[in-house]
Structure formats: structure tokens, C-alpha cells
Length: 116
Image (cartoon, rainbow, N blue to C red; front, top):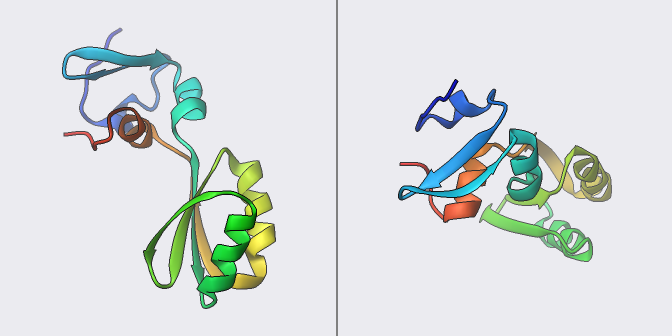
């Protein structure tokens, strides 16, 4: 069965996925393989001590974005790595959220834009 969709959450259960942008196949594989290649695990860390949190994250040589003065978003390969980061930054965070990478992250990584 072949399913075409712009709703990426519908495709999460597929066995095999082709990602197409402007009529061209830009990636193809199982969801798991695509996630491991293109969609990192996401951590949002909230803090009252941004200076120390960023210092600790930089020491771990991690990629992060700072959406506001009280939190940063950190990308890691998987949940096991996320646990290591959380242990390292635990003294400096007030709370956190985490999520696994998804098809939207894959599409963003491959095309530089959100699904339209």
C-alpha cells in the first residue's frame, strides 16, 4: 500500500518512507533509520542560572539554541545521551521537557523548512 500525505504524523507508522521535496526524492528509508540519521532527541532545559547551564552544555560540546532568557534547547543523539546531559546539568535546571525526534524534524533537517 502506498500513502501520500502532508500530515507527517500519519506517516509515523509506515514501514518505509520516501521524503519528497519539489517533486524530488531527497531521502528514503525506515522511520527508525531516518530518525537516527536526521532527527535528534530534543531537551528543553529551564534554569535560574543560565550562565552556569550554558557553561556546562558547552563543556559537553553540545548544540543548543536559547529561545529565551530562562531556557535552552539541546540536541542529543538519543535518550541515553539525554540522561547523561540531564545528570550533568541537574544542579542548574529548574525543570525540563524532552521528546524524540520526529518526521517534521527530519523534513526540517533535509529541506531547511517546515512542511507546507
